[in-house]
Image (cartoon, rainbow over the protein chains, first blue to last red):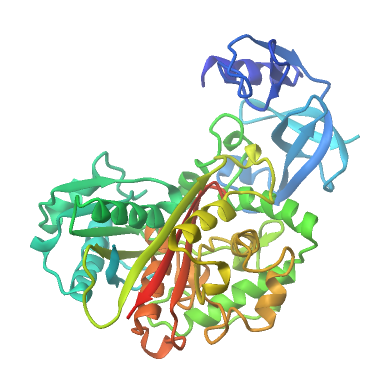
Length: 120
Length: 378
């Protein structure tokens, strides 16, 4: 895992949803990079979001890819549009529908703290 | 001018004791025979990749194994769009005068060559390693996310999706090489095992062993040639999390470029070879390209338009959903079938006289799009 991804996942372990925002053009971005996807600038800051957003898409995984995730199945995977203006993947607490307001929580699984979105 | 002068394939399904190289050789033999060529005629070779034979130089591994010494060779990787991308490139090579006869070949023992879970896990890696794969996502899950949103926006039901699985199975039943031939109903699809809601087992293509080879030539050969009249690509995202809009995934852009190059419009097309890794893939591609209005693809199917004798015969070999999916060759089977239909060589499956085909491949999660226009010449 690179340093940027480690910073995101360390945030999850601390109960924070961290994201990057460009200091020059104020664009947030959905996964961290060394530059701003909109303006190309390199002056990015890390922020901690409020963890609130709207469900863009969801699925319930029944056929898990590994033993580790079979223990959890079925589980919801969601794409959430965060209020800060970016989209991310996470787990979801059933039942959820498209357009529903959610807030982020975290749960430990396989040595990681995974974001899970709950009905707000 | 570039022509698709040869098409060859193996049956798809469980082919014990096969390897990517044995399968590719078998398909290459058939394609060369179809084109009336021998190995020494091949001066260009394009290969793809095989998850059961990861190698830095698959094209020259195959060239040495098969006994080719081409002037031009390399492999190319674009997921499910690789086959269409290879044929597009072969056309450029031929048009540029670089090659005369290009062999395009892919094959893989994706079913028998992987242990349980391995294929699923390998394929899931098209997801983002740091921000998607850690959630226990799978390829069906990525497509299911897309499906949930698209169905929400355009009012599509699970029964609408199921119709496409049923149609592909009906077409596969007429092909001796198809992986899945047992007839199914919409009710069977809806009752099949849940995989990643809203997708069920029969909304998903199987994993197969198999290979397909095509020959792209500078000169037309035989009675009726099949010309590669246009090609186009579009690449708007890689990961499902980065999709800006489920209504603009790249398919329309790629098809528009291909049609403009061929100097044709949608109304000129009478055969379709459309990538169908999942039922939702097929439905979205048909609607985005404009072959059916938004939310209307299933209605168009029910009216008979996509049947073998319909106005827009669709994947008459059975597609990935039923002919089978062995990786890159799975998407090439659509081209092999389109070539045969246009040349009038599809035998009992011949869907009347067809003049103009649109073949479309997508890789990733509707991420990479390649469209080709094939036209009957003479």
